[in-house]
Image (cartoon, rainbow, N blue to C red; front, side, top):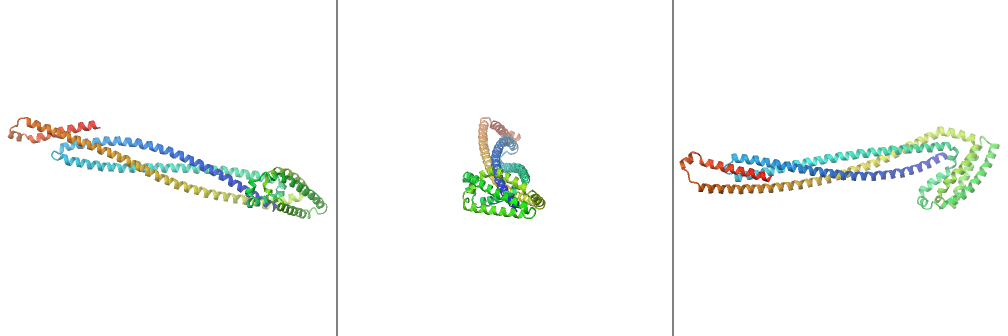
Amino acid sequence: KTYLKNLDAAQRIQANWRTSVCRGAYLRIVTAAKMIQANWRASASRKTYLKNLAAAKLIQASWRAAGCRDAYLRTVNAATVIQTSWRASICRNSYLKHVAAGRLIQASWRASMCRGAYLTTVNAAKTIQSNWRASVCRNTYHKHLAAAKLIQSAWSSAVCRKMYVKNIAAAKVIQGYWKVALCRDEYLKNLAAVKLIQSIWRGVVCREIYRRHVAAAKLIQDNWRASMSREAYMKNVAAAKMIQAKWRASTCRSTYYKHVAAVQMIQPIWRGAVCRKLYLKHATAAKLIQSSWKAAVGREKEVKNITAVRLVQANWRAVVCRRMYLKSIAAAKIIQLNWRASLCRNTYHNHLAAAKLIQAKWRSFYLKNVVAALIIQSWWRAAMKRRPQPDPLLWKYIGGEEVAEGIILSVYTISMVTSMFFLS
């Protein structure tokens, strides 16, 4: 029973210590992950912006070149085919075609850019998630390994100090319950005051208990070595526990747990001396009880406790990881939505500015062509008025009207080609 109480107290202390260590490590990991995510997002945004800028410049240059070539081919075909009503129909149709082409290009470009940005963001999120999970698993593995080593070392030291574990039962049980229930805050604030009281009181109590144990051991060894030794030992332990409880309740309830640090230095020396003397007196009974109890109960209880602790830790870590994963997914979705909205807005504004620029240049180009055509027509009319009129029959025979229209059309074509060359 004493060993079980000691084991329970040790497990509670270990659980609290591991919880604090895990919480600190978890907060450090979360801070590092946030910093890495911020740096990565900044670099990704910078690279995406530079790529979009270079792509926009390339698309604008290609689109302008293609527009100029298409305009030139349409103008040449119109000059060879249309002869009468080219001013109204060709300009209107060309303008409508350019508007439709611009809308189609804008729609295709927006779709491709949004799709590419979405795929890039999804791949980046997957990469971050995989790296984060790998780091969490590595850290968890190292923590489990360190915890297992610590438990093994503690268990080995406990086995080596056989009688030492039995004698610290009352102190550990009372310390564990009292720390958790009443004096946790007071313990942290007033740690330095109990050193003197513990040293004096434990010296007196230890000397008194030692003298009582020596007298009881001599009496038990003389009369009842085999049967009454265990009963006398239990009576002595019960009396010591009662004395300790009454004294602590009356005098040291408010100040006992403020001075725990000093006992850590005094306890090993005193317990070592008492345990060595008690061990020499009760060697036979202690060996028999320890061997049977350790073989039947100790291993099973230790295995059950370790399994339960590992199961609780695994469940808690799984819950924490699941919560952090869900939070990261929600944050990634919000960032993706905001990024897509900003990207679509920027792309829309760039395309709108490019469409307005193209429309302005097309209007100026159209006005220049109209002015050039009017000038050519005025020159041609003036030349026709100045030259002598031919014979009407001969003029009609050689197709003079068609020849004049062909000349006007060729001059207009040359002017349009020249203006487009200088415009580009």
